[in-house]
Image (cartoon, rainbow, N blue to C red; front, side, top):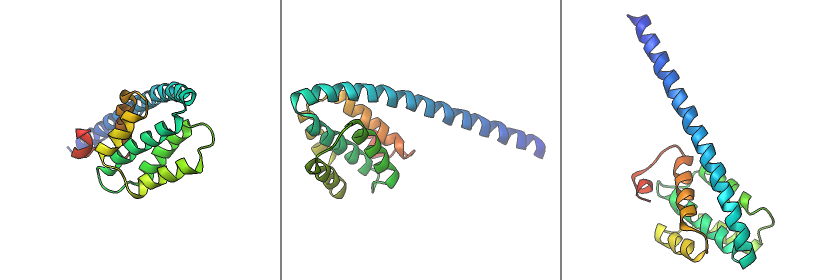
Length: 148
């Protein structure tokens, strides 16, 4: 009987591992698609001179989302910075870096972040995707994050 239970545990673990692998693969596809959309949006915003406002708004939404479950973890911050600021592809002025840092020091409310998003000139659907990625980045989805 104990041998049979070991087999069940192994099967359960194998099923769990396969599910995790599938979820990560799906998340990588989502990230790739979002990256493409963001790059295109950033190009049009650069032409209009709103590029850095969009970067600040993206960070504000990501920080507000990450803050919903308590303090922003180093992992969440690293993911946000890697993804959003990595897309900036070029030098970010010190004033913009300072504004982004201030978002971490005093995270905006979701309402404040949404206002920045609306003013950024970027499609709000991109912000929805950023929220989704941030929520998944720490592997725990809090009730407050689900509401977003």
